[in-house]
Image 1 (cartoon, helix red, strand yellow):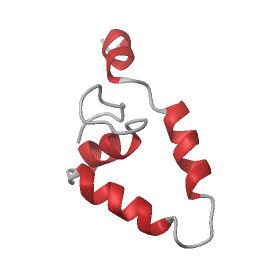
Image 2 (cartoon, one colour):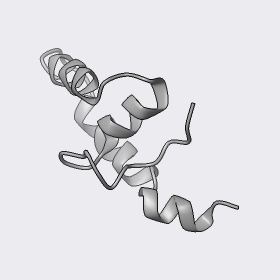
Image 3 (cartoon, helix red, strand yellow):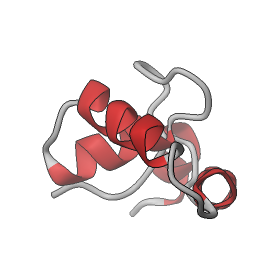
Image 4 (cartoon, rainbow, N blue to C red):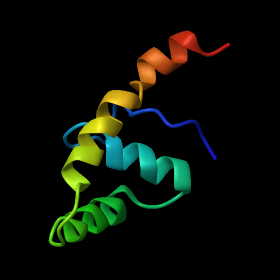
Length: 67
């Protein structure tokens, strides 16, 4: 499993779904569909997405801070 970082390639909005897909070995499209379906039920999905967008570093930033 890789470190959670928003990739520079393959992201649609913020790269959160692509980062989660890469981390758990799934397709980014699958994660995006799961997220969109989850938005049909009440809950804080959008707020969680925004929080993860702010918490996950970009791939470039993670590479600079990695040893």
